[in-house]
Image 1: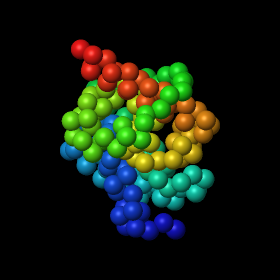
Image 2: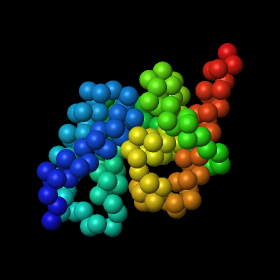
Image 3: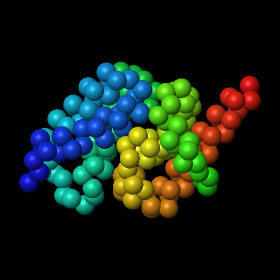
Image 4: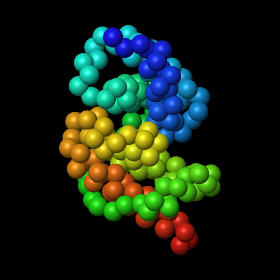
Length: 165
């Protein structure tokens, strides 16, 4: 049996950061994080342990976010399955500490189509492994890696285009 208080304390930051990466709004992320844990508490008996608890919580939070968008009649992005291969340098990911760079990436990320936006957010902001991401999407780990690298490539290209303006 899961102790929801321990789960909350351990995974609050992961869920909050993931929802913040989706919504780009601290108030919405806070509200939906609370709702995610409320839903998890109600469904805790349904958790079969077939995936990592963090993956299960992120799935609940993603569905909660999409429900929020539908309820508020906001755009819900359509999934696309286009894939590629290219990576960010480790230096680029480290640059997220620089608020200006982070803001530029968030602006580009906001325009990115699914599943690139979500895979990138799960990997970078949610700190999920490729294995966890693949479980969340019911796809292969290779799919998660390639989708992440394609997202990185798209973001890098957009940032390079901005730099040349």
